[in-house]
Length: 319
Ligand code: XMP
Image 1 (cartoon, rainbow, N blue to C red):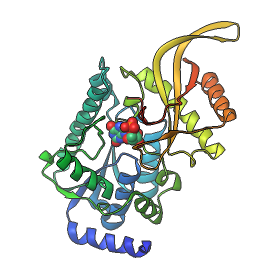
Image 2 (tube, helix red, strand yellow):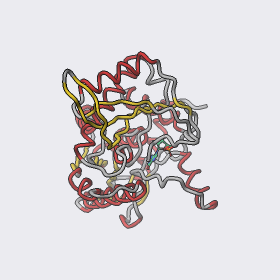
Image 3 (cartoon, rainbow, N blue to C red):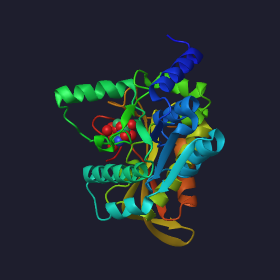
Image 4 (cartoon, rainbow, N blue to C red):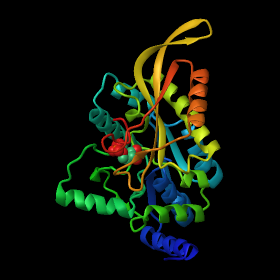
């Protein structure tokens, strides 16, 4: 129970006295947590903050432009936009195993980030969007040596080798408080109330080997699904929704011709904690519209299916 404007002022004061005149670097992913850290630090220390936004080629449609628009152009935050998609694609070529893909994406991110940090010799601080549940989770993982189904990698996982002091201004906040803070700092509602997006991005939504061609098809299908969810009011009624690319071909018919193209699976779930989840009972009319649009607008996809698996036994992501 706290007052947001007071909290913002207090947090700004704390950051200023901690950081002084020193410079700070932040990996900005476009997700809620790093976005709120960027907005808060920019308020507190302005140009002493440099953000690094890494395009790994596995982002959603127009995501890089949106991040640059919101932070660099609208708020005037210093953001270095690194297009590393080629590097990630090369590193992922021929790799099929989901955990292997996660490791590679995590490792490449660290390399790219370190290269950028090395170009900023005056930086003394590494800011991270760690929130209270992350603090608890990593503490319990250390004691319990938790049985991991998936090794979650996100932009938080940077090593100590950077020799920077850690700045974690959201450490004591729950997710809903982080969102309130984001709104108070003037971030767009849609950015603050976004569904979660995994660190490895589309890398774990393209089953098996990742290819740029697959990523391009998936991005377009996913954007149509999300657009229709928003238009129908279902985005807010689901906890997470996305398209998955299946690298199998099936036969279809279009006009007087036969097609032989890839499959898109749609996934939408409702959950409180993401540990268990129900598949969302989306209206058939909505599913029909999304299916028609994807098949008509995304050449290369000729079949759309809906995932009706709960968690358990499924996981939310397909990999
Ligand atoms: P699963 O698929 O394990 O997903 O049921 C639970 C939640 O975690 C997200 N997820 C990830 N997030 N890095 C992340 O930052 C990852 O490697 C990763 N894998 C899954 C998933 O999107 C869902 O919200």
